[in-house]
Amino acid sequence: MPSAVPDALLDALDILRCPTCGAQLTVRDRSLHCSQRHTFDIARAGYASMLGGGGARSGDDDEMARARERFLGSGAYAPLLAAIGELAEAAVPALAATEPPRTSRSPAPSVPAVRDPSGPDASGSAPTVLDMGCGPGYYLAGLLDRFEGARGLGIDTSARSLRFAARAHDRAAACSGDVFAPFPLADDSIDLLIDVFAPRHPAEFARVLGPSGALVVARPDTDHLAELREAIPSMVAMDPRKEERLHETLEPFFVAGPQRTVHFELPLDSVRMQDLVAMTPSARHVQPAALEDIAEQLRTSSGPVPFSVTVSVVVSSHHPR
Ligand SMILES: [Zn+2]
Image 1 (tube, rainbow, N blue to C red):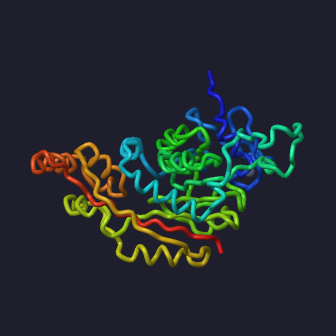
Image 2 (tube, rainbow, N blue to C red):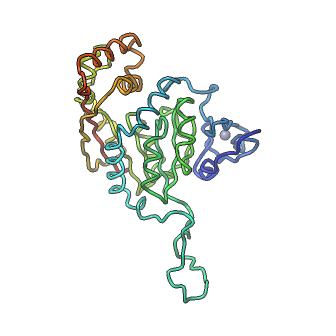
Image 3 (cartoon, rainbow, N blue to C red):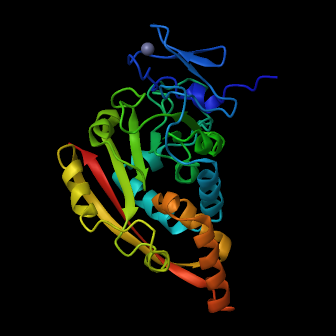
């Protein structure tokens, strides 16, 4: 029995565009179609497959996607989610000001029911949050919980991650897409764009963001996971010029807003530690046997006191020029 197309994906059709020709899309037979007959399947898991070439070519494999889902689902990075939400709310007040859908009640019950066309719901379109490189959709779902009137879209290259993202939240649609290609989205269609530990495409970010929208970027600070990097020499080293290069690439398109660093100690047991390593860009460079060795060392050396790592993440907001 074919499963239904998720409501959140149907709700996103007004902003989705054909990645090949840029035309609007309609749904037919569990596929998205444009007027030029480009066709994109809607996967059984509920996300739209909008990458060319038959599917994901990079991004998280199954093991990485599961590690990320398990680690983030444990709430380990909840302080980071909170910081992203606070910066987003300050940068885009409309996100928090919007009433939840379907809650329009007349404030004056004595007046006969006459619809006020200038009242709430007159425009009908909810503020839209895009999570580029959404992984399992943890940050997107958390923001939709915070902003009850908003809708969301997660884009990722990994089919494995999108299976989680497509069911991360009732108001979140998911589709595959390549951050380095044109996004399958209309101009000015997004109110908040978040990029959390993901690659960036500043020109496309600026194109899809509305003039009163904002970009919120989260990336590791130089001391992020320092203890793990010390214990696992094959983990990818931090580029000390990373921050400088980020600002250089955003500068032509965005005005920098407030910035803060989320900094805390995260206790790790061996499962959490292995998940954390597995979801970093280092995963491909670290042999599973080496990880097990380190887990064993942690178990024996730390005793009842849990090993902990420094989490240090820079979060900043940016407005389109
Ligand atoms: Zn097309």
